[in-house]
Image 1 (cartoon, rainbow, N blue to C red):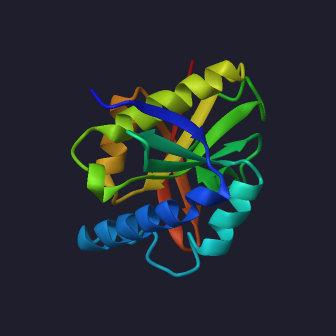
Image 2 (cartoon, rainbow, N blue to C red):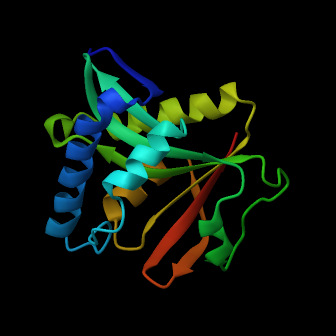
Image 3 (cartoon, rainbow, N blue to C red):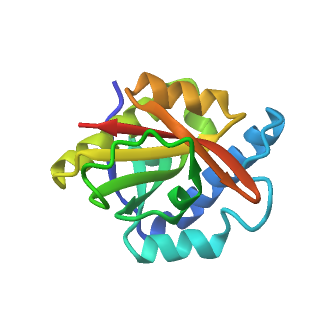
Length: 172
């Protein structure tokens, strides 16, 4: 089994992160999923800013960046667009939201998205956070499957002008 772990990203990881994001963008396009298909998001400036704010994480497998995620603590403006909400709100803004999950095509088929999700859940627990949220495009069935098999349940729809996605939550 390969040594795999999660750590905070740094600027030395940028090229590997950008390659993964671009590969994921192409994969989504091939699946006819209208997610990440504009040059506006995610872009290099967004990723750079998130790294500098210590909000971007990488999954490392045998010394190589194999996956990425942006982790937001506290209020997430995307959830201001949530409709049909059944979110458990007992923790208020004391929650973690996961964004921009992507796994390198070099590691595709090794179930690393499950490792990435598991490590993020462990990170939440280490920070004494019990409410974890994630959303994905309504057409992204692969990510929906990963989210649901990790234990998250669907709790509404995020409807923004350029994005419609299912919102999920896991209470730990």
